[in-house]
Image (tube, rainbow, N blue to C red; front, top):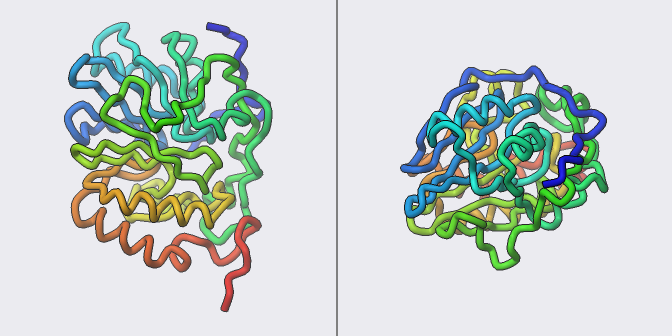
Length: 285
Protein backbone atom coordinates (compact mmCIF):
# COMPACT_ATOMS: atom_id res chain seq x y z
CA UNK A 1 0.00 0.00 0.00
CA UNK A 2 1.14 3.52 -0.76
CA UNK A 3 2.55 5.22 2.31
CA UNK A 4 2.29 8.75 0.87
CA UNK A 5 -0.60 9.71 3.08
CA UNK A 6 -0.98 13.00 4.89
CA UNK A 7 -3.21 14.68 7.43
CA UNK A 8 -4.33 18.26 6.86
CA UNK A 9 -2.00 21.12 7.77
CA UNK A 10 -4.20 21.91 10.79
CA UNK A 11 -4.05 18.38 12.23
CA UNK A 12 -3.41 18.36 15.96
CA UNK A 13 -4.33 16.61 19.18
CA UNK A 14 -7.43 18.07 20.84
CA UNK A 15 -7.29 17.86 24.66
CA UNK A 16 -11.04 17.37 25.17
CA UNK A 17 -12.12 14.28 27.09
CA UNK A 18 -14.93 12.71 29.11
CA UNK A 19 -15.36 10.45 32.12
CA UNK A 20 -16.03 7.51 29.79
CA UNK A 21 -12.73 7.83 27.91
CA UNK A 22 -10.97 4.45 27.83
CA UNK A 23 -14.12 2.42 28.52
CA UNK A 24 -15.02 -0.58 26.34
CA UNK A 25 -18.52 -2.06 26.34
CA UNK A 26 -19.68 -5.18 24.50
CA UNK A 27 -23.06 -3.82 23.51
CA UNK A 28 -24.09 -7.05 21.80
CA UNK A 29 -22.11 -10.26 21.24
CA UNK A 30 -19.28 -9.35 18.90
CA UNK A 31 -19.98 -5.59 18.92
CA UNK A 32 -17.58 -3.59 21.09
CA UNK A 33 -17.97 0.15 21.60
CA UNK A 34 -14.84 1.90 22.88
CA UNK A 35 -14.72 5.56 23.88
CA UNK A 36 -11.66 7.64 22.99
CA UNK A 37 -11.86 11.01 24.75
CA UNK A 38 -15.24 12.23 23.41
CA UNK A 39 -15.86 9.89 20.45
CA UNK A 40 -16.74 6.23 19.99
CA UNK A 41 -15.17 3.61 17.76
CA UNK A 42 -16.61 0.13 17.22
CA UNK A 43 -15.13 -3.28 16.59
CA UNK A 44 -17.56 -5.67 14.90
CA UNK A 45 -16.84 -9.38 14.66
CA UNK A 46 -18.24 -11.70 11.99
CA UNK A 47 -19.45 -14.64 14.08
CA UNK A 48 -19.02 -17.06 11.19
CA UNK A 49 -15.40 -16.26 10.35
CA UNK A 50 -14.03 -14.60 13.48
CA UNK A 51 -12.83 -11.70 11.33
CA UNK A 52 -13.53 -8.18 12.51
CA UNK A 53 -13.93 -4.67 11.10
CA UNK A 54 -13.17 -1.31 12.72
CA UNK A 55 -15.81 1.41 12.47
CA UNK A 56 -14.23 4.89 12.56
CA UNK A 57 -10.70 5.77 13.62
CA UNK A 58 -10.93 7.92 16.71
CA UNK A 59 -9.21 11.12 17.75
CA UNK A 60 -5.81 12.42 16.63
CA UNK A 61 -3.05 10.57 18.45
CA UNK A 62 -5.18 7.54 19.40
CA UNK A 63 -3.66 4.83 17.17
CA UNK A 64 -1.86 2.96 19.98
CA UNK A 65 -5.04 2.86 22.06
CA UNK A 66 -7.10 1.51 19.15
CA UNK A 67 -4.50 -1.16 18.34
CA UNK A 68 -4.41 -2.15 22.03
CA UNK A 69 -8.20 -2.48 22.19
CA UNK A 70 -8.20 -4.69 19.09
CA UNK A 71 -5.40 -6.91 20.38
CA UNK A 72 -6.97 -7.24 23.81
CA UNK A 73 -10.13 -8.57 22.19
CA UNK A 74 -8.76 -10.51 19.20
CA UNK A 75 -5.23 -11.40 20.25
CA UNK A 76 -1.66 -10.19 19.60
CA UNK A 77 -0.96 -8.97 16.05
CA UNK A 78 -4.65 -9.20 15.15
CA UNK A 79 -5.88 -6.80 12.51
CA UNK A 80 -9.27 -5.92 11.06
CA UNK A 81 -10.22 -6.82 7.52
CA UNK A 82 -11.05 -3.18 6.85
CA UNK A 83 -11.80 0.21 8.39
CA UNK A 84 -15.27 1.62 7.63
CA UNK A 85 -15.76 5.37 8.11
CA UNK A 86 -19.15 6.83 8.93
CA UNK A 87 -17.69 10.13 7.70
CA UNK A 88 -14.40 11.99 7.57
CA UNK A 89 -14.54 14.59 10.36
CA UNK A 90 -11.33 14.86 12.38
CA UNK A 91 -12.67 12.94 15.40
CA UNK A 92 -13.60 9.95 13.24
CA UNK A 93 -10.39 9.73 11.19
CA UNK A 94 -7.89 10.93 13.79
CA UNK A 95 -5.67 7.84 13.78
CA UNK A 96 -6.54 6.41 10.37
CA UNK A 97 -3.16 6.92 8.67
CA UNK A 98 -1.21 5.26 11.49
CA UNK A 99 -3.72 2.39 11.50
CA UNK A 100 -3.45 1.88 7.74
CA UNK A 101 0.34 1.76 7.99
CA UNK A 102 0.30 -0.62 10.96
CA UNK A 103 -2.38 -3.00 9.72
CA UNK A 104 -2.06 -2.62 5.92
CA UNK A 105 -5.83 -2.68 5.47
CA UNK A 106 -8.18 -0.74 3.17
CA UNK A 107 -10.55 2.02 4.26
CA UNK A 108 -14.09 2.38 2.95
CA UNK A 109 -16.30 5.47 2.92
CA UNK A 110 -19.20 6.89 0.93
CA UNK A 111 -18.21 8.31 -2.44
CA UNK A 112 -19.38 11.79 -1.39
CA UNK A 113 -16.76 11.83 1.40
CA UNK A 114 -13.93 11.11 -1.03
CA UNK A 115 -12.93 14.77 -1.64
CA UNK A 116 -12.29 15.19 2.08
CA UNK A 117 -10.32 11.94 2.30
CA UNK A 118 -8.14 12.33 -0.79
CA UNK A 119 -6.80 15.84 -0.23
CA UNK A 120 -9.15 17.60 -2.63
CA UNK A 121 -11.38 19.72 -0.41
CA UNK A 122 -11.57 20.90 3.22
CA UNK A 123 -14.76 20.59 5.20
CA UNK A 124 -16.72 23.82 5.70
CA UNK A 125 -15.59 25.84 8.69
CA UNK A 126 -17.22 24.87 12.00
CA UNK A 127 -19.83 27.37 13.11
CA UNK A 128 -18.71 28.97 16.38
CA UNK A 129 -21.70 31.34 16.20
CA UNK A 130 -24.31 28.58 16.30
CA UNK A 131 -26.73 28.38 19.22
CA UNK A 132 -25.06 26.12 21.77
CA UNK A 133 -22.50 25.85 24.50
CA UNK A 134 -18.76 25.97 25.03
CA UNK A 135 -17.82 23.19 22.60
CA UNK A 136 -19.38 25.16 19.75
CA UNK A 137 -17.26 28.16 20.75
CA UNK A 138 -14.15 25.93 20.70
CA UNK A 139 -14.95 24.45 17.29
CA UNK A 140 -12.72 26.79 15.20
CA UNK A 141 -9.79 24.97 16.84
CA UNK A 142 -10.88 21.63 15.35
CA UNK A 143 -9.02 20.31 12.27
CA UNK A 144 -11.04 20.54 9.06
CA UNK A 145 -8.49 20.39 6.24
CA UNK A 146 -8.74 17.40 3.90
CA UNK A 147 -6.60 14.40 4.72
CA UNK A 148 -5.14 12.35 1.88
CA UNK A 149 -5.43 8.57 2.11
CA UNK A 150 -4.47 8.20 -1.58
CA UNK A 151 -5.46 4.81 -3.02
CA UNK A 152 -5.92 3.32 0.45
CA UNK A 153 -9.50 4.60 0.60
CA UNK A 154 -12.26 3.07 -1.52
CA UNK A 155 -15.90 3.90 -2.11
CA UNK A 156 -18.43 1.66 -0.42
CA UNK A 157 -20.33 -0.70 -2.76
CA UNK A 158 -23.31 1.08 -4.27
CA UNK A 159 -25.66 -1.80 -3.42
CA UNK A 160 -25.59 -1.02 0.30
CA UNK A 161 -23.49 -4.01 1.32
CA UNK A 162 -20.68 -3.54 3.84
CA UNK A 163 -17.34 -5.18 3.05
CA UNK A 164 -16.59 -8.09 5.43
CA UNK A 165 -19.85 -7.56 7.36
CA UNK A 166 -22.41 -9.56 5.37
CA UNK A 167 -25.22 -9.08 7.90
CA UNK A 168 -25.00 -5.29 7.80
CA UNK A 169 -26.06 -2.74 5.23
CA UNK A 170 -25.06 0.89 5.03
CA UNK A 171 -27.61 3.71 4.84
CA UNK A 172 -26.78 7.12 3.40
CA UNK A 173 -27.60 9.62 6.15
CA UNK A 174 -26.32 13.03 4.95
CA UNK A 175 -26.68 16.36 6.71
CA UNK A 176 -23.85 16.27 9.22
CA UNK A 177 -21.60 15.67 6.21
CA UNK A 178 -22.43 14.97 2.55
CA UNK A 179 -21.38 11.32 2.59
CA UNK A 180 -22.30 10.40 6.14
CA UNK A 181 -23.46 6.80 6.54
CA UNK A 182 -25.04 4.68 9.25
CA UNK A 183 -24.87 0.87 9.54
CA UNK A 184 -27.86 -1.37 10.28
CA UNK A 185 -28.31 -5.10 10.94
CA UNK A 186 -31.85 -6.31 10.43
CA UNK A 187 -31.74 -9.53 12.48
CA UNK A 188 -31.29 -7.75 15.83
CA UNK A 189 -32.02 -4.19 14.65
CA UNK A 190 -28.73 -2.80 15.87
CA UNK A 191 -27.89 0.63 14.44
CA UNK A 192 -24.52 2.33 14.29
CA UNK A 193 -25.74 5.87 13.71
CA UNK A 194 -22.44 7.74 13.52
CA UNK A 195 -23.28 11.41 14.07
CA UNK A 196 -26.66 11.33 12.29
CA UNK A 197 -28.02 11.58 15.81
CA UNK A 198 -26.17 11.22 19.10
CA UNK A 199 -26.92 10.38 22.73
CA UNK A 200 -25.23 13.35 24.38
CA UNK A 201 -25.69 17.09 23.95
CA UNK A 202 -22.41 17.55 22.13
CA UNK A 203 -22.32 21.35 22.15
CA UNK A 204 -22.47 21.44 25.98
CA UNK A 205 -19.00 21.15 27.53
CA UNK A 206 -20.43 19.91 30.84
CA UNK A 207 -22.56 17.21 29.21
CA UNK A 208 -19.71 16.09 26.96
CA UNK A 209 -17.42 15.71 29.98
CA UNK A 210 -20.04 13.94 32.14
CA UNK A 211 -21.60 12.01 29.21
CA UNK A 212 -25.11 12.80 30.48
CA UNK A 213 -27.29 10.64 28.26
CA UNK A 214 -29.97 12.29 26.14
CA UNK A 215 -30.94 11.76 22.53
CA UNK A 216 -30.04 14.70 20.27
CA UNK A 217 -29.65 15.62 16.65
CA UNK A 218 -26.19 15.79 15.08
CA UNK A 219 -23.50 18.08 16.57
CA UNK A 220 -24.61 21.58 15.65
CA UNK A 221 -21.27 23.25 14.99
CA UNK A 222 -20.31 20.83 12.19
CA UNK A 223 -23.72 20.19 10.61
CA UNK A 224 -24.14 22.16 7.40
CA UNK A 225 -27.37 20.80 5.86
CA UNK A 226 -30.20 20.71 8.37
CA UNK A 227 -32.89 19.69 5.89
CA UNK A 228 -30.89 16.58 4.96
CA UNK A 229 -30.09 15.92 8.63
CA UNK A 230 -33.81 15.96 9.45
CA UNK A 231 -34.59 13.52 6.64
CA UNK A 232 -31.77 11.22 7.76
CA UNK A 233 -33.07 11.00 11.33
CA UNK A 234 -36.56 10.24 10.01
CA UNK A 235 -35.16 7.46 7.80
CA UNK A 236 -33.31 5.91 10.73
CA UNK A 237 -36.39 6.09 12.97
CA UNK A 238 -38.32 4.10 10.35
CA UNK A 239 -35.84 1.24 10.80
CA UNK A 240 -37.13 0.89 14.38
CA UNK A 241 -33.71 0.18 15.88
CA UNK A 242 -33.64 -1.80 19.12
CA UNK A 243 -30.09 -0.79 20.05
CA UNK A 244 -27.94 2.09 18.86
CA UNK A 245 -24.31 3.08 19.14
CA UNK A 246 -23.69 6.68 18.16
CA UNK A 247 -20.52 8.61 17.46
CA UNK A 248 -20.85 10.51 20.74
CA UNK A 249 -22.54 9.41 23.95
CA UNK A 250 -23.42 6.07 25.47
CA UNK A 251 -25.21 3.21 23.69
CA UNK A 252 -29.00 3.33 24.02
CA UNK A 253 -31.71 0.70 23.68
CA UNK A 254 -35.32 -0.23 24.37
CA UNK A 255 -38.10 2.26 24.89
CA UNK A 256 -35.63 5.01 25.78
CA UNK A 257 -34.32 4.74 22.22
CA UNK A 258 -37.61 4.16 20.40
CA UNK A 259 -39.51 6.86 22.29
CA UNK A 260 -36.61 9.30 22.15
CA UNK A 261 -36.09 8.81 18.43
CA UNK A 262 -39.79 9.20 17.66
CA UNK A 263 -39.84 12.42 19.71
CA UNK A 264 -36.71 13.69 17.97
CA UNK A 265 -38.34 13.18 14.57
CA UNK A 266 -41.54 14.87 15.73
CA UNK A 267 -39.78 17.87 17.29
CA UNK A 268 -36.63 18.04 15.16
CA UNK A 269 -37.17 21.67 14.16
CA UNK A 270 -37.52 22.76 17.77
CA UNK A 271 -34.93 20.61 19.57
CA UNK A 272 -32.27 19.77 16.97
CA UNK A 273 -32.08 22.69 14.56
CA UNK A 274 -30.46 25.67 16.28
CA UNK A 275 -32.30 28.98 16.39
CA UNK A 276 -29.37 30.74 14.78
CA UNK A 277 -26.06 30.01 13.05
CA UNK A 278 -24.53 30.45 9.63
CA UNK A 279 -25.82 27.07 8.37
CA UNK A 280 -29.35 27.66 9.62
CA UNK A 281 -32.02 29.32 7.53
CA UNK A 282 -34.10 31.83 9.52
CA UNK A 283 -37.01 29.98 11.06
CA UNK A 284 -40.48 30.99 10.02
CA UNK A 285 -42.57 32.48 12.79
